[in-house]
Amino acid sequence: MRRPRAPGAARRLLASEAGSGLVMSLMATAMFGIVSLTIYCTLRYLSRESVYYMRAAQAHEAAEAGLESALYQLRLDPLWRGGYREKSFWEGAYTVTLSTEDPPWVTATGYSASITGFGRAARTIRAKAKFTSAGDGYAVESDARVTVNGAESLVDSYDSAVDVAPALFGSQANIWSNGSAETLSPGLRIRGSLNFRSGPEPEPSSVAGEIVLATERRELAFYDGSSFATRNNNSVLPPDVYDRETKMLSIPSGVNVFLDPGNYYLNGIDVQGTLTARAGGPVNVYLNGDLSVTGAVLNLGGVPSRLNIYGQGAANTYNIGLYNLAPLPAPPLHARLLSRDAAVTIERVVYGKVVGSRVDFGPKGVLHFDISAGRAAPDHAAWEPGTWVESSRRR
Amino acid sequence: MAVAIAVGGVLGLLISAMIKAGLQTLHYAMRQNMIMTNARKALVGDGDKMGVIGSVRLAVSVKALSDDSLALTPAEGASSSFVLCPPSLCLSHHSLEEKRADGVSSFAVGYYNLNDEGLIMRSTAPESVALVSAYLELDGADARLKSRGAWSVTRLRNSP
Image (cartoon, rainbow over all chains, first blue to last red; front, side, top):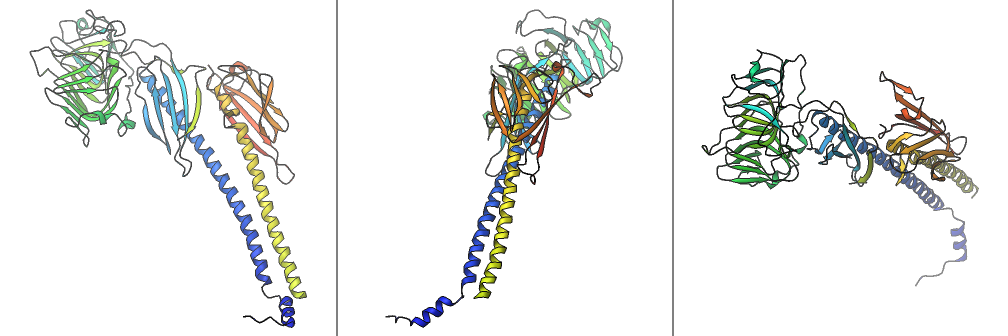
């Protein structure tokens, strides 16, 4: 039990200043703490707000870049519908999709870099393309050489928008070579005009239209599919014919593989069996390697612009070869082969359009140029006034 | 005892001066923040409310070459105009004025297009306008917190 203090001791305790400094220090520290915390929170909010606005602006500019990139590609090929998927752009990326209309609506979504706690800002812009009229398209475009000198080789034209399987063909199959051009005579080989820049002039009787020695070089379109190298529809390909490591598609004889509409990125294709592109949206194959067809490539619906093979690598070879089930008639290929860097050899009937560094038609090589699939690049491409809209969302 | 009171007084003055300085800093930062936020609201927008930049982007054309207001014709719907309604910037739409940002003391607009040589020139007719510049001055609230300017140049994306 504690004993009560004497009155004198209480007075001394009350009069003492010991500990007052500690109380004041604690109060001062608390005040400093509160003020500091408030300033810190405000500044943190300010900086985050600023960063978010900056990211939003970055996302918008990325979307604008995607839109302009698509417009450039449409300027080269008005039928291009491939788009891009999260293609890198500075610190962010953009995704571009195109409608199947003609001219298409283009939707570009730009993404900023991600911010911790905020995610990444996204901005979407949509507009409709507008083309001015252009001249005739080209059935064959080549950088170095075109040879149509097989015994039965022929290049003529039709329009899949009118008839996908015509009995008669027209004379709008124009050819452009930035190098030489060679045709076999006698006999008509090219039902259209022929433009070339070097080498001897082909025999006039083998060309239905004009033969023109061009002075200017024509830029051949390149279709950049790098954004589909990692994000694509390859996962639907059967593992027994598709090697995920090498990205090689090898279809042995007697096997049929179906391709659904979508974007595929492959390092090589060898078709000894059957490769069938299903109808619907376009099947776009970005090919960074060689193409060898001795089997059948079928395009259900028969519209060439629904099966596009876009070359990605340099110095590749595309061989649409003799049918391995001959003497059965080789099934025709309905497609657009667009590879400005590939050497293309055609040994059978192709409906569509062909672009290559060299394009050679073998003895039985025939191209029925689809006017709708090979429409000429427009003189000018822009956005339809009044169609440009933007929206925002976070992701 | 007297010494303790004197020391306490000095400490109190010192602490109060520091707290006052801290509060002034906070006040200054908040004011600057408010100015920046108002500038963003006016130019970029606030949530679903579109600012000057977004409205110009969507516009098909401008209606008049006014220096202190911006009248726009959108692709769809009625025209609208940004006007100064002191001390705010307002969007006038269907004869109603909707406040877009506070603390705006002046609003100046410039109109430009490309001439035949591809050079930027001041527009002489509303239908030729392709670029719009907007300059805002935002109040600093008192003499020490000076006013701040915000500036933008935007292209009419929907113009023919």
